[in-house]
Amino acid sequence: MTEPDSPTNNGGLIFIEPASGLEIRAVSPSERDVAARILAPATGEGTAEAALTAIDELLATDKAALYGAFIGLEMVAAYGIKRDGMSNEIPIIAVREDHRRRGIGRALLQDALRRSGKRPLVVETDDEGLPFYKACGFKLFGKRPHPSGIVRYRLGWHAPGVRFKGGSTNALTHKPLDRSSDASS
Ligand SMILES: CC(C)(COP(=O)(O)OP(=O)(O)OC[C@H]1O[C@@H](n2cnc3c(N)ncnc32)[C@H](O)[C@@H]1OP(=O)(O)O)[C@@H](O)C(=O)NCCC(=O)NCCS
Image (tube, rainbow, N blue to C red; front, side):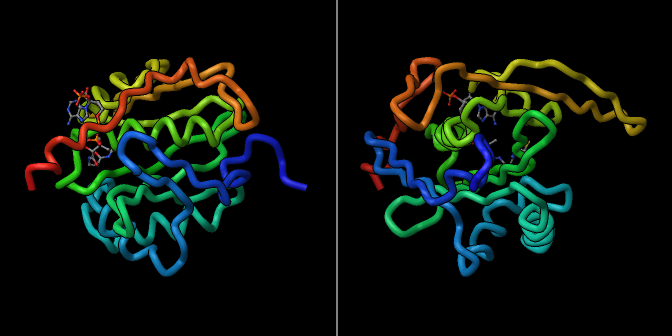
């Protein structure tokens, strides 16, 4: 039997953004290299190799999953999710550079929240990632300065009422994707 609110629980489900056709589903093993190239900028090293290692480590842990966002057959973004105590955490997330600032990152976080069920979502980030998470509805609850001078922030997002079976999604700060820039290309 599957455990409630495990990030892998709903791995078989595919979510589709009605406005854009963006499809968010589990990344298959044969798609991991593509996901690693997209996730490279989200690693300290900034390489696909580092991202592949991060993916392998993620998927080796219990209750973890890797999801991708697809436009047609093309993967344009990806994120990992894993259990962290009573919460679920997003250890890695990135949108392909040529698809940023169109709401895809927000759509990934909304997807993660849906798949998280009753469990809050937690992220850890630095000054660079902070505005994105705050804009998407995450609330700051922890700040940890490193000896290097870099500050790490912990943020959480909980949407009561968000459920898979007939639940409300009113708590989500939904904003349809802006695909207008696609039309011109
Ligand atoms: C961070 C990232 C995932 C955001 O993805 P995205 O698809 O561009 O984000 P969205 O378009 O959904 O942005 C939603 C909101 O977040 C905020 N935001 C997003 N990127 C931002 C940035 N670089 N600076 C400031 N605010 C930002 C904005 O308020 C934005 O809304 P707006 O465009 O209407 O102003 C993407 O820039 C990325 O992949 N970066 C490299 C990897 C990375 O930094 N990962 C996070 C590690 S902590």
